Length: 274
Image (spheres, one colour):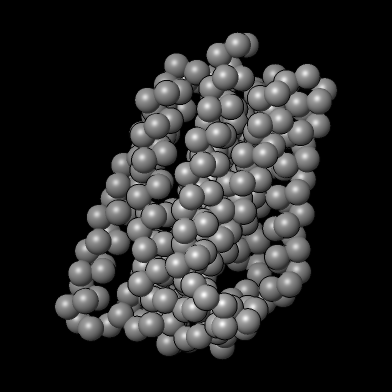
């Protein structure tokens, strides 16, 4: 993938993310006018969250978490264009996959705004598939960045990127949605939820360990920083997309901003000295 192609790709998704912000704003206004916004049910895991200070369910905290995620994506695409426009970095290309994963959360936002979670419609299932696609793509993006960033793999980056997207799509289509159980974040839950969460955790651990092993092999402190910052990013992302309370909102937002700064700074230093 040439620099021009990559930058054009980022510009396209910058435009898509800005359009998504506008769509969410219009959707929210329309839902307010038609009184179709309905607070999701109080289905929370673990239930003990209902009894801990600052973790009680809050619809306002949930909506603010959407605002953070929705604005985070175009800001990051802008930063990629500003600071990496002339830098050929595989890690940045796969980082765009993480941003696409964040963008997928807009499907859950629309589900809440129009009260779709109360139905058993195909639209609810489709929205669940989109969110599941994103939550599979997020850890997979960092795993691919960790495993497929050496020089030998750079000639096949388009192929690897497409494979990464297709794997996420296949998982999203194959895994059934449990429309009878809606989470407090307005998300239709997946079937085999325990198995899916274990898989996501293994992807996270593999990505983090792979970055760290690369750092040891290359004697590179930057790769070790990529290991810790990718871990922080994925954990913060998981907390933020599960934010139905102010504590999770604060932790997820702070971790996402800090992790993004450390990750992008490490990539910049890595290629600046190359």
